[in-house]
Image (cartoon, rainbow, N blue to C red; front, side):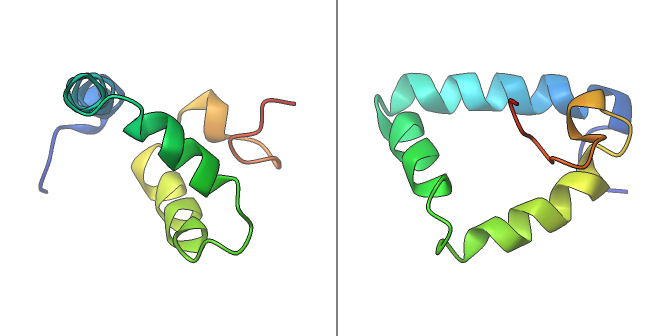
Length: 69
């Protein structure tokens, strides 16, 4: 198995994301805007990987994957 153990993945990604965000101001916000575009071809791959990366995380454990409501 590569990468951090499952119980530490959320923490690792949160840390990595905060480091990257600090180095590239506004890029995170720009990526969020791009991610809302239904024609974005990466969305399918991301949604496919979320279930494999965080299978037990309650945020991704519903019919509206990653939805805020």
